[in-house]
Image (tube, rainbow, N blue to C red; front, top):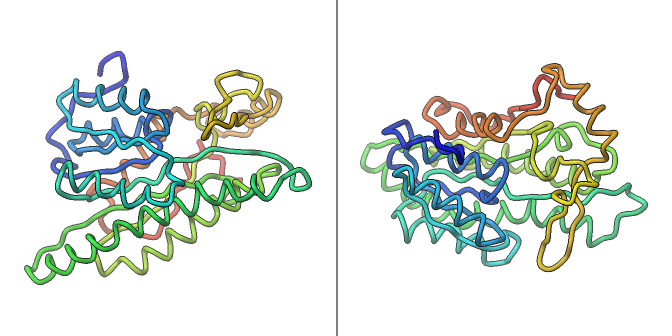
Length: 285
C-alpha cells in the first residue's frame, strides 16, 4: 500500500469486472473505488469536482489498475444514462453499481424548507433510481442472452443507507426519509432483478469519519453544491456523545466502511440479495 492508501491491484475476485461508484472522489466512495480496483475491477469514478475524481483515477492507474472519471452532479436528469454509458464506452460492460453519493442538510422539521427536504430526496433517492433505471436495459438484454447460452453471470448493486434511515435521527427528517427510501428501493429491486441474476443489497453506515461527520464548526465540513455553500457536520458536543454510544468505542474509517461494500460486490455474496447490513461498530439504535 502506498502513501495514498492505494493497494496494488491483484488478479482477484473482481478481475475483469466493471464498476461505477458515485461520489467516489472523497471519503467512503473513494475508499470503495480503491478497494474494488485493488481486487481487479475497472472503475468509473464520479465526483462533483474534477480534481478529487482525477486524483482517485491517477492513484488507481499508478498501481496498475484501470479507471476513468465521470464528472457531474448525480441529481442532473441525464446523469444516470451518462454514468452507465461511460462504463460501456470505456470498458465494454457493467457488473457493479455502488450508489454512494450524498450529503446532509440538517434541521428540525419546523425549520426545514421544501427545497431543503426535496434536495435530500433528489440526491439519495431519485439519483440512484435513475442510475439503476439506466442500467436496466443493458442488464436485461445481457441476462436474456446469457440464459439462452446456459451461463449465469452475477451482477451487483450496493446502495448506501445510514442508521438515520434504519432508525431515524432527530434533526434529519429529510436525510432519514431519503435513506429509508433507499432500503425500500433495495428490497424491491432484489425481487424484480433476481431473475436477471442481479444481487441488490444495502449498507447502512453508522459514525464513519468523513467530512460529513466532522465537527460542524470545522471549515472542512462545509461543501459547495452548484454554487451553494452547504454546512454539513455534527455539533462538537454531539460527536462526543455519539462516539460514547458505539460499543467498539470509536468511529469507523472509510477503509473499514469500504470492506462491507466490497463484500456485497464480491463472489462471496453471490447468494445474498435484498439485505441491509448495518455497519456501526455495534451501534444499531
